[in-house]
Length: 269
Image 1 (tube, rainbow, N blue to C red):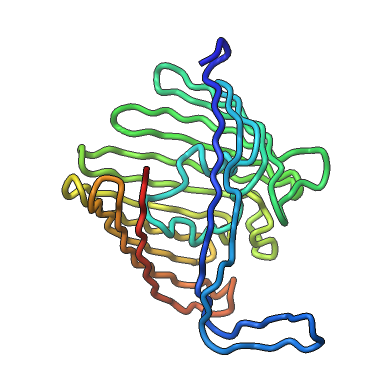
Image 2 (cartoon, one colour):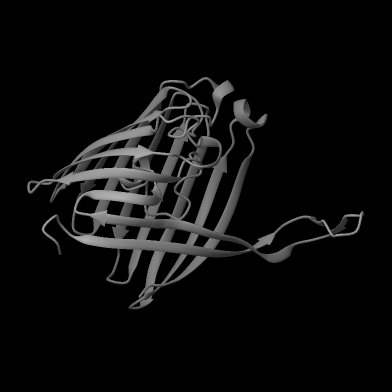
């Protein structure tokens, strides 16, 4: 603790080992490439997801955009961003005000990353307001993409129906929803003008919680994810999840639907 508030640092590095379906092409030092058929396990990704310093409400460093973090992402499922997969990583300077009555506000100047990196000295800007009480919370964020000079906004409400049962609803809108500009806005990678999310969690026992989320957008994408998070022992949680996705014909040329599943083994300490 300091006279200016709590001083802390946080860093998170993630390692991912993947199995890729289909052929894998290899580029060797010889003039000829070669391909191996089938599925191959390989060490694909090492990412620095977070690396920032905080002093009181001031945060500086590598983070995920406040457009997602301030409202709490989406539901309690693993695949919560199927219709909105882009727009996470950024370096930023943000300030969060937290009042004693459940009110909080944030202002964040952000650089973006990859395709979304700012192309001038003008940063992307995020602002948000939230009010949280025992019954739940309600909040809103607005993001301005400095490259596109376009806006996006989200409004979210969470309700604690009982000690065991909670629900949420979230809606989003962007100022440039023409599909010719699909995923060009750092803060709006869904299809069309608007998107929506609804979800619920129910704690059956002290160890088992069921979660479900439905998401959809103006381009007629639809995703449904459901799981059960089971704490086998303290610090070790097993989460099997199933996912249904219906594609948008306007975005991909077909409206096929697909099913998938995964299981997560998570050790927390």
